[in-house]
Amino acid sequence: MKVLLDTCVLYPTVMREVLLGVAAAGLYQPLWSARILEEWARATIKLGAGAEAQARGEVALLRSQWPVAEVVWPPSLEARLWLPDPADTHVLAAAIAGHADLIVTLNAQDFPRQILEEEGLARLDPDQFLMSLYADHPQAVADAAEAVRREAERLSGQDWDIRRLMKKAHLPKLGKALAAA
Image 1 (cartoon, rainbow, N blue to C red):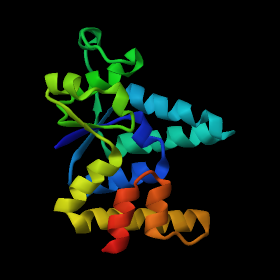
Image 2: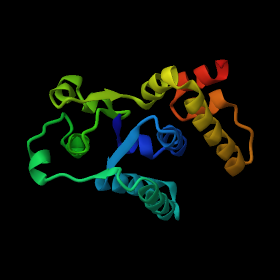
Image 3: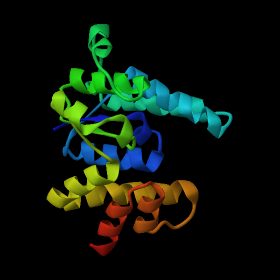
Image 4: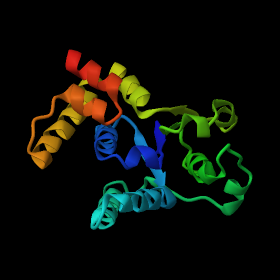
């Protein structure tokens, strides 16, 4: 399954790392575009000095780890598309060009289901997406989340309960399921 990851699910670190952890386990093939990666890097500016440089380093690492994930498309594709927010048509164009099955985004209102269905696409938020993967591959998802939890502890110097960390990362259903397992 090919999944286009919107900027809003790549920018929060914990969410991105869990999503890419399950991709690394072979549960899906991630896709994005150069523009999505650029939006991520620019969004970090508000975090202060050095944040954008760090994000650009993470983008470079992502590109090296997933060399076939970045998709391109002809301008004519984006020109024929319509979404409620014209600034999001590039995301839809990337999904179409990459032959994605699904767009994972937190911006449901910007990607109406009927428009996506016309293009053979679906949309899920990251919590729904990860829960669907967890239903079929609980150990792989749990392992990815646990690796992220351990890294969060290492970087922050504090203990993180899996449920609390996932809730903070806007993945509350996944956190609840992992805590109950």
